[in-house]
Length: 245
Picture (cartoon, rainbow, N blue to C red):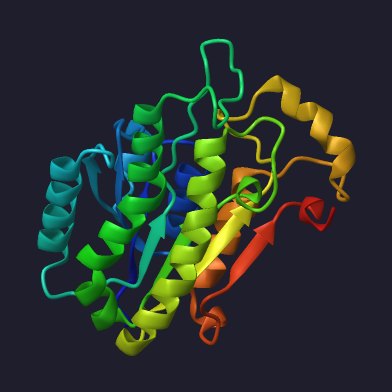
């Protein structure tokens, strides 16, 4: 019998990350997860949920400790997927969009630490394990990284644009390790990050609805599975067609 595959999912306690963890679990994968919060007790009872490691990806020491602990859990076993889902999009106390002129530069640094530098550090930290598994990295970008968004802040949007570029660079270099690197680019997805004003964007979505975390999770799974074995350096839009306009 073939051994179950293993995936690491960041930001797994809620939203897209949690839906992704469940998607892989439902398909028999073992998962190692991290987030700032703990995971629900019901999830921890799943025998394939190998380890959850509370981690602050904006803190270099916390991130390094996560890499060390996850690699220790893996041992000499292969890693088949790394999903860089964790992200940060700061707002004012009134949920106002923060632009280039009114955003705190310290907050910009934290956004880039989590949204861009953490995926880079994790890719490097798990490169050997991914090579053993001929695995795949999936970065979660955003429609806001490709066009000015009415609600997403500038720091978030620019960090996601940079993550798209990082995906291409990693795909080029990791090909030598037999590791594929792609990105999933969500549009308006019904998560806790979404605010009521996003409802006004539905008329701009050809499919006429917001996406669900599961819409994104199944696309992530596809990019980690053998069904996408010749796909690398790509960014898949999960926007209901919104990106076309």
